Length: 407
Image (tube, rainbow, N blue to C red):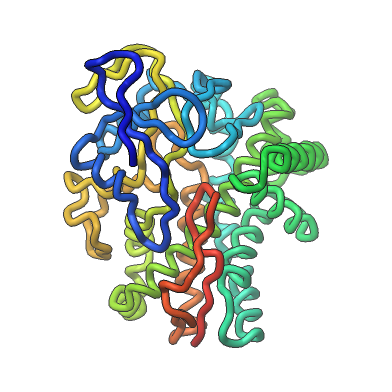
């Protein structure tokens, strides 16, 4: 961590350079912890892009910025904002870089695919997929790599069922999603993967017109027919669901299982009290540092005071959901995993208009995976010391490369 003088005014707040270290396991970024407690609204510079941005770290301030329309995602499109990734990745029609009313229109369409009826069906599909995968683990025998045999194929099976993607096409989609979100894949490879995926989803939505189904492809086709979406927007939304539903769920569930394997007293209690599962999953989502650094920026459209600091119009702003989830003003003893914690809403899925549209499905997948894994293998444990595990680099969501277990 280096400090640099602000280039525009001698009395302006200093700019903190955030190198974003490669972290493993449940380690929490020390700079984020420092800023949360000592400098909760501060200026930062990240490894790529230009200039500086503001970083907001406290729970209430993060919620405020995430929900206030004066902080615009659309205004960040095309700006070389300081960032973690070597390249910006917005797609045409990307709901992540949209503001109301366009954002509202696109999110309303997505909500149809995540309604109570589709989610009930998807829970059944998720359980069926998990049972098949655990059969493979049992046939494979110990030791087995859960990332390869469970965490990678499971969310792909669920996302494929959600989207109406034929089973034979799903490995190709997994490749496109992994390439698009990897900082190490290179710009051309990432752009090609996104273009191939958008072309595929354009064709899939085109084949789904008039199908009268609950799959995402059918919902998007109906929205195109109704004029609620353009074809390009429909394909962009499908790609967003693909990357979130495969990459994020894979790494988050692997991270969750790692946390339980390295907290045997919590695992023992969860095994003894199965009804505790939903609360335990929520606490794991709060506790796990699921990403390095931050997500997408916003641009403040007018001078706005946040946490006692006035952020000038035109400046980029990031929020940290990780620090919000460790704010002691909201979560007493926030660095402790506590399945008895009062259920203050964590921000692992974001907040406001841009909160993750698939949060309910991600919870279902986490619950199905955790419950099924230990029901099938009650003596499941790591096959190697925790410190020997390798953790992924250059990905937007943290997770182990492999998770070797025995039973």
